Image 1 (cartoon, rainbow, N blue to C red):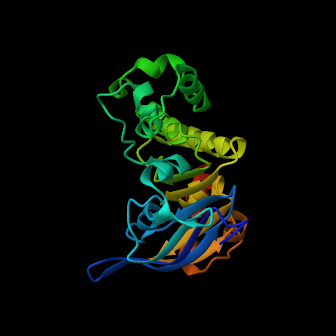
Image 2 (image 1 turned 90 degrees about the vertical axis):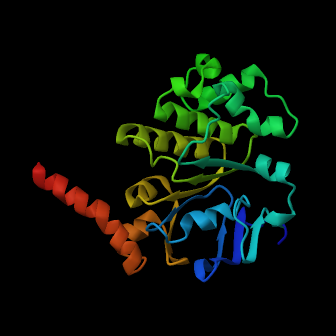
Image 3 (image 1 turned 135 degrees about the vertical axis):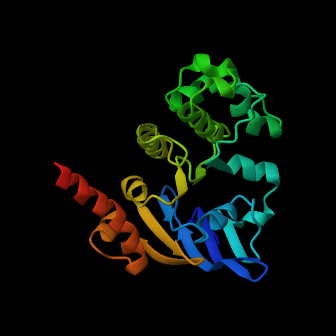
Length: 253
């Protein structure tokens, strides 16, 4: 792959665990600046596929490319700088302050983040910079996940991958943080790949929705196309959930 290569490219990517195939020959491109949601039922393979991007999971076969280069060819520290990773369990180190948690990625690469940069990152995720010296257990769940997003952005990565990032949050916080992540995606010219089981969230936030079923991509459409009935039966089964909820809410009114 040369100039103009997609930000991420999967080429016949497969992952097996013994006799179980979690990912079955996925080939697709994710372009620069796209916000892509990867949706599917539990066990469909979506988180496994996502983790092949940052090498938390090594494919059994096939290749993942980042900016036209095989992901496996990057040194670990270089991969960390290129990819911001946000995951559901948040994963803040409890013995480190908020500032230390945010700065951990650059620190592992030998760089010290100045206090002004940490304050800037906290502001980006709508947190008061005075929280920099707090410990994670002094924060709410939503605040901790915002710190997780700030940490993912600390190395100035242009690729953000998120694995069920809002799943543990209450609905109000989840909605607000989703809007903030979409805003950051647009303002910082990011490429974002987000795994979610929530089709409504995918339709509201993403430019493009991939539906995964039994290890394969079975739909690849815009939210508008999916809402108009395209994408096939698995995709429409997922779209029907928020539709059904909307009808029930309208009936209450």
